[in-house]
Length: 254
Ligand SMILES: Nc1ccn([C@@H]2O[C@H](COP(=O)(O)OP(=O)(O)OP(=O)(O)O)[C@@H](O)[C@H]2O)c(=O)n1
Ligand SMILES: C[C@](O)(CO)[C@H](O)COP(=O)(O)O
Image (cartoon, rainbow, N blue to C red; front, side):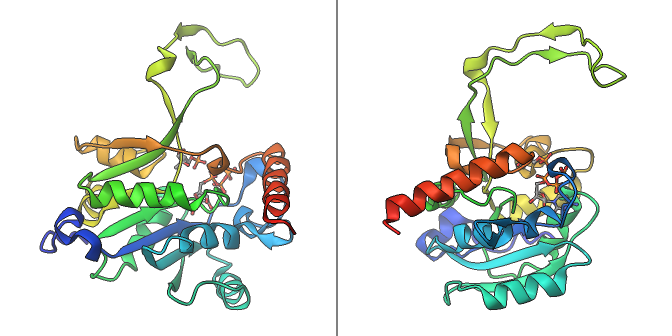
């Protein structure tokens, strides 16, 4: 899958073409019973469509590859057909796998050769503002092989010895220095060759794509994330997402 022969995004400069892979194949177990998470609605529109629009809002993005629930590719294709999306953007839908990592890999298998910058964005982060998307793309175009948007933590974090049974007390092992910690969001941005090499060579339980690049010993940088780029994971996150959309409607004056 790797292709080292193309110019790097920094060499390609403003001509660097950007594609986004959106893993959307998760079930959303933590959200509770219902349709696959990406197909559940926020303000009447599927979460996936919000996420697709958030990516296509960037003028730099010309291709979006949606990794759909394996039993939902036809439904995702028809959602992309019926919702208004920018004409400058192409859309491809592929079926996903059993894990996020596998789903991203299946999305990358559909990446055409003429894209230099690749973003990976969770469908479960439907409200990321376009400025955050553009900041990630710009950092990759400026030469960073891997870029993650992230925020400082509001809570103090403890490292524990995980309990065997949920709810049992857990011994605290350490309190990492909070000022050095960041909560990582998406879209994460990569130069194509780096991301493909990571998915070709790194295995194991790693929860984000930048973590795979770190595992290869390569440089990953953080740019400022955004509080509206939070991940819809549990039922309370749906309430917050609806509130953010209501605030946007109010600010837009309708
Ligand atoms: N097999 C999987 C698992 C997850 N994802 C995607 O990865 C993103 C982040 O995953 P997460 O929020 O954990 O979603 P779920 O796996 O659906 O959530 P849960 O663990 O609660 O089931 C989501 O956009 C999800 O659709 C995916 O494409 N394929
Ligand atoms: C990629 C990610 O959103 C970065 O915070 C996160 O790691 C996904 O984790 P999940 O457990 O698959 O939701």
